[in-house]
Image 1 (cartoon, rainbow, N blue to C red):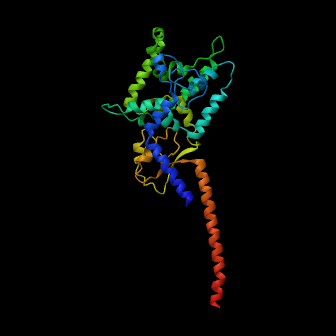
Image 2: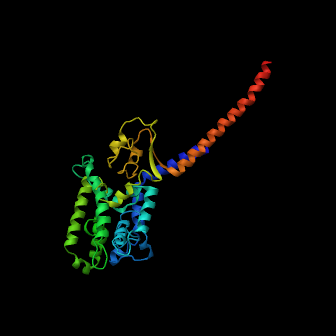
Image 3: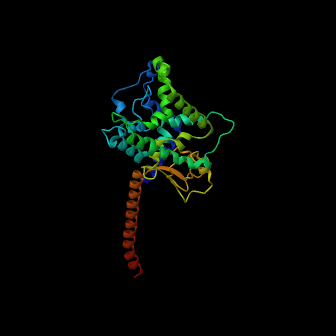
Length: 328
């Protein structure tokens, strides 16, 4: 009974957490960008915390950023002739992926939150991305080519590779870094050139697409989401569907804005663990679970069941001789 009550208590806590996703996203954005006065000063925080990677996509050059972007840090190290592989950054990414998978995308990524807010802006017609599923493989190509291969293979005279994704593609750098710094510092504004114009155009395109489609950057472009998606099947945090309870109404699939049918694949690469399917399920057949805790609970339940059966067998064996004596 204690085990079952513990499971129910954990489920209620997860449910309360999921229903407050917008608040959690806002808190995560603030915790990764707490140095707000730097927006006015036009300076970047350079303290010791900047050597630590944050889980989500958050530009190093953002004046308020307290940590480093994992994608930017990975490119900086892999593009250096001193390092053949960025073990530290890769280790952090693997750790986060193993613990949470793409839960980071759904709850902890500042740019994911920005896209969620943009999609709330009224538009004559919101479009589905179900017919554009082929584009989701683009982010894996970006991860391999722009984030890893080109910075590692193409280096300048001093042995440094360019951060191709951050420099030529990433809209977060423009939104969090270039725009606020140029507004606060006239010398930076005067130095802006064609590269800024190109990336600003990319940002404007992403903004427009985010209003029309749900999270286009996450679905098609983000290399960090591509990396975390590889851990969705093995991460400790998992979504589970109770097949006995499920009535196959399809409401979860229709609700999912990431085009995932959790009843067919509860660890889909595109699932960002946003919890909308859990809220939509009319029979509460979908639940978020922590695998390590659940394994311990299942093990405890098996031991309790086995002990109960053993006690029953012992009790029945003791009663049988009494019955025989009464018959005699």
